[in-house]
Image (cartoon, rainbow, N blue to C red; front, side, top):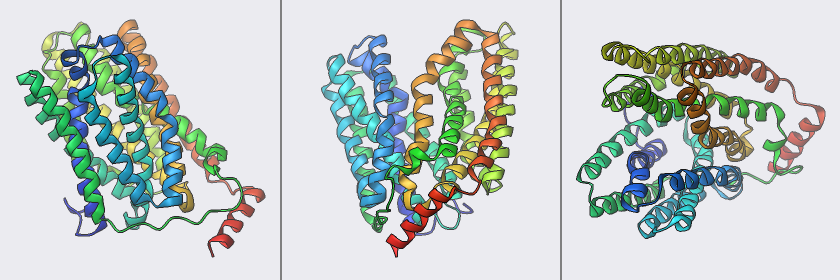
Length: 411
């Protein structure tokens, strides 16, 4: 987007709602685990188990919510998911044992996954000629909001009292509630007409499912920054521990500044395939740089880590841009929510399985594990252009007849 803030209208409303929402997300991402372990006094193993259960439980929520948004109107469904997020988050203050924690975090995580899918028809409807570019702009807004939330959470963590933690949770819930209220200024989106033929067409689109799987494997790269690098820095290098915050800040600043610019050139599925390929190679380079920081002097380790994060973020920009392009361009407009819900399965599996995989390879195994992880990203990126070409082949006659039937129904 050429402007920092979109012109008055639906795009500004969506951006404002997204910003307020992600301030709340920044509070939770920064201090959520510490709240449950330090204030509620749940064992870390129970917290990890509960978050894993919530990740798996939320996988189907995106598909269902996306389909509901297509059929019932995206604005209402999206607002409802944020309200559920607010209520579930507020319920965190009542958690005093494992099972209430699991119920609350499952509700919050499921609503988050559902909201991402339900928002997709709104982005397609109000995102202009290039909704993919507007989606990239929203990612920059997301990083800005999360950064602000992280700063606010840092204040609560520094105080460290029960009241401070409780205020942090309440602030998170209030942010979600405000985000839902802002959506009232958004014009309603008419439901798409019900097509004839199979209802869950996204689950029958094999090329799209393959791209979902490939994008999900590459989405493990997001956990490199939040799981692998902090642990690696602390246990395997002599770099100062405060550099954990420095690496996150550097990544966030680059994404805010360059995500939209990186997405402008990824303007077709073929270009997205090339971006996936470049991202895979770049991730191999970044993993190699990070691995070399072990055993190096403090200044060299810090330099290698910062360089690795900078290179990794370039790959992140290309990977995100590619995902925005293929997920929208290869999804039929009549089923945007359903298709984007399916595409979110890849990221959901990466959230659920990525931390364990990275810890096993990069932390437990050590330097060779980083090379294996980088090679996995590279192979995934090299496979993506072939999957894109498969997805662009003319549909079989049976699928074309379904399209014709839908158009007749819509008319």
